Amino acid sequence: MGQRGVHSRIMHRRQLSFAERGSLLGGGFLRGIERTIDMPKQKDLKRLVRSRMQKTGESYTTARVQLTKKSSSKKAPAPVDYAALAGMSDAAIREKTGKTWAQWVRALDAIGAATMLHRDIAEHVHTAFDVPGWWTQAVTVGYERIRGLREIGQRRGGAYEASKSKTLPVSATVAFNAFTNARTRKQWLPGVKLTVRKATSPKSVRITWPDKTNVEVWITAKGNKCSVAVQHTKLVSKEDANARKAFWAERLSELAELVSG
Figure 1 (cartoon, rainbow, N blue to C red):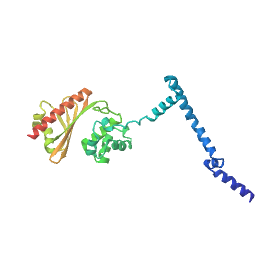
Figure 2: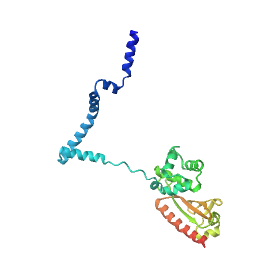
Figure 3: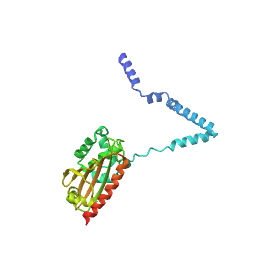
Figure 4: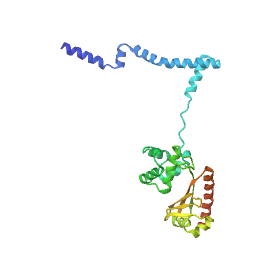
């Protein structure tokens, strides 16, 4: 009985919390501990106040007020503008893919996409999320820009590209033929001896340009209209990319006038 009683009292003492032991010694014990923990912070503040007093000539009270005001007025960092980095608005990417840029960043970061090849990211976006052709590229390129893997207008390997899109008041088949039929193509794209490498009716056309750069055309049906997106790749500079973008804006406008008539 004597040994069990001693053991019980020892266990009881071990089970007392820090706060309980403090209460046995009186509330002043805990207050004293709190003051001891807070002392380094107070000393640091006093040191900063005295340093400011020497620099500004302010009184202790004024210097302290200014320092605490400055500390409390610090703003939280602004959220990252993913749309600006990607080069496309949240509204546009959400309308066509079902996700905002923030949601795409979370989804692609989860699979380590920042370390993946471009084609592997694009394949994942297409198969896992059922995103159509051109918008697969838009998501992939936008994500790579957000993660600093390329600039706007630049490919992962360092070369540049130009993209332009336009909605046409005709079916996808008519737009497809405007790119693949040589006679029709000459009416809106004269003087260009290009080579059609691959054509998938009425969705896409892959073209080799006379200077050996590449052009990819993606056509998306929209009822009795369609959207045509052109991506011109393997360009040598940002200036070249800007010039090609202006060129395709002009040519697509010419194509719109042609098919509208």
